Structure formats: C-alpha cells, structure tokens
Length: 103
Length: 253
Image (cartoon, rainbow over all chains, first blue to last red; front, side, top):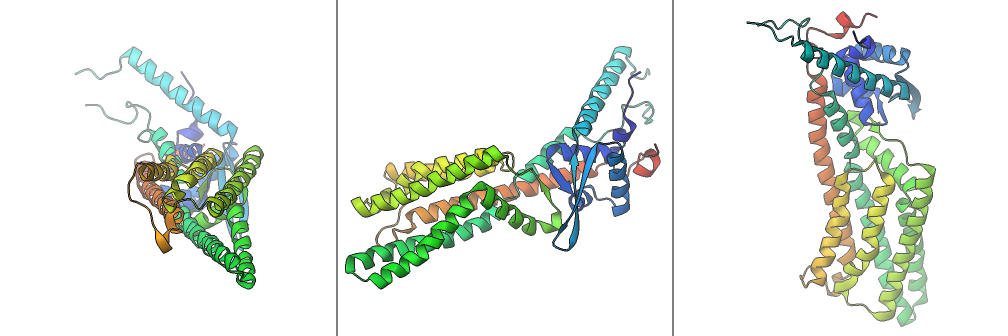
C-alpha cells in the first residue's frame, strides 16, 4: 500500500503548502487571515511543516515590528508532488478493485 | 449508503491546485500600488511637460532666468522618472507601497527579479529615457502636430511597458498588459482619424492622460481581480478546516 505523508495529509497543512506553492513567500498575517485560524493553531502547523523541512521561516523586522515570512522549500515541493502521486495511486487502486458499495 | 470517512476517498480540500492558482492570481494582481504609482508619475510628467514648454518659450524670448529655472525643475523630474522606471529601484519602491496599501491582508509576494533581469531593466530604462529625450527634441525641431504626439510616444512606451512586464514576471499578472494594449489601441485610433486628442493649450496632455489613465485603469482592473481571487482563495482555504478532521485530532505525529 502506498504511504501517505501524514504531515501533508492534515488538511490545514495541505492548504498552507498549496498556498505557498502558488507564491514565493507569504507572511504570518496573510496565512492567518486567509485560513481563518487562531494564531496558536497556525503556529503549531507551521512548526510541524518547518520541522519536516517543508517550509522555510524567515524572521525579520518591518521597522520595529517583528515580521515572519514563510516559503516552501524544494523538499516541500517534492513532498507535495509525491503526496499527490500517492493519492493518485490510491485512487487508481480503488478504481481497479471497484470498491463501490453494493446495494 | 456508506459514507463514513474511513471508506470514502482520502480527506482533501476541494481541489487544492485551485488554492495555488488563486493565491498566485491574488499575489500578481495586488495592483493598487500601480494606481498610486501612476499618480506620482502624473505629477512627475507635469513637472517635465510644464517646464519643457516654459523653457522653450523662455529660450525663444531670451528670458534666461525663466529658462534656467525651468531646467532646474526639469532635470530632477527626469531623474525621478528614470529612477522609478528602473525595475530594481522602482520595483522596490512599489513593493513598499503595496505592502502599506495591503497591510491589513498581510504580505504575499514573489522574489525580486534576478540580477540579469535587473541589468536588462537598467538598459530598458536607459533606452526609455533616450526615447523621451529624442521625442522632445523632435517636437522642438520639427514642430510635430499635437495629434501625433501620442502615436509617436506609443512607438517606445508600448515596447517599454511590455518589456517591463517581461522583466517583472511573475510579479505582474496579465492584467498589467492591459496598459500597453490600451495605449497602443489609443494610438491606432488617433492614426485612423478618431478625434481623441487635445489641441491648443491642452496639447501637452496628449501623452500624459492616456499613459496615466490607462495605467490607473489597468491597476484598478488588477485590484478588482485581486478581490475576486482573494474571495475564491478564502472560500477554498477555509472549507472543511473545522470539519471532522480538524487539526488537533489528526496532527499528532
């Protein structure tokens, strides 16, 4: 059976990576307002993605205000691509096995 | 019907590839900065057009004080136009402007252009500056009819804007191409005989109004599209987030 990357399989983290594949970088505020999450929730998901090496965190200042940008890494892109490939394999396997519920 | 999550297809958002697409569309079309940028350009062009006219009048009448005063306004205005036209410098200014205008939505961006693109940007801006100087000189030397000012300027403004768009990709979206397209269409209409030009005391506006007006229009169109893109992005990115597989339940690794 194809292994699914459990880090990416979580819906919020999948959405974060999907957003970051569309752009070069996004900041915490953008992800927070777009995903409509609490700060703590978003932070914990980002920490997991960063821990897996899928997201690169860039901390800095805008004047005196702390500012954090996120960028998907090459490893993150590859992992996301592998994730979709794995899902496609599962779909194909289900289609072959014809798992449609019988009446 | 058996619809339990265990038996259904893997839980996933509604087409996440659409999330990437709308995120990109949103990032590329945050173009309110272009509208403000154009307003600055209007002021700078006025600071070039007015003194150019006055310098010509003063030179012909021998009023050298007015002539040099006009040149003193003209030179920094041309310098500022060239500065803002160089993608490396103008782009940085514009990114800061966009950051402030969209501060409430947060920042989402593309990497600044590469060193090679920056070098081409300097060449492009230099050529643009030379073309402006050449067209002003031509106007002085041959007294070109005012109705042809915009079509002549289109010969270098349109390639400049298209070139700028190429150098600024993927930061600029396709809506930005509306600007050179409308400017070129305006030139074609004038050459075809359409009475869409200024005469007399207002002839100096023949270039300024179309270039700024179409720039602002394309900026506003881009901004409106960014509203649609952001709406779609939020709709897709928020679907099912608080559903049965919310983070705290699944995230334990």
